Length: 84
Image 1 (spheres, rainbow, N blue to C red):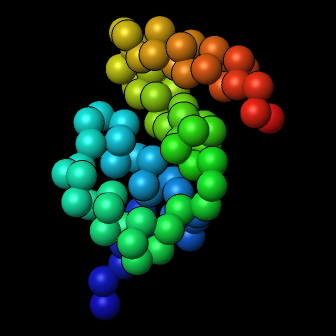
Image 2: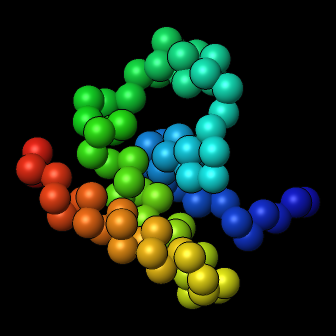
């Protein structure tokens, strides 16, 4: 029996957002994903930064440094978004 303590049930947008946090996958990845299971409207414009903020804050707690400025910038983006 294999037990994976890191499994979770979550929104698929979380996983796609994470692929953009420290770079990006090849364009074909996103094109194929959209073709097979399109992301709901607003993901790229609104929710991606919200999903990634958690990970940047976690990195700040663990490693400090520039992650604070990155988190602050992301929070500014979220707060200035007038689509909400």
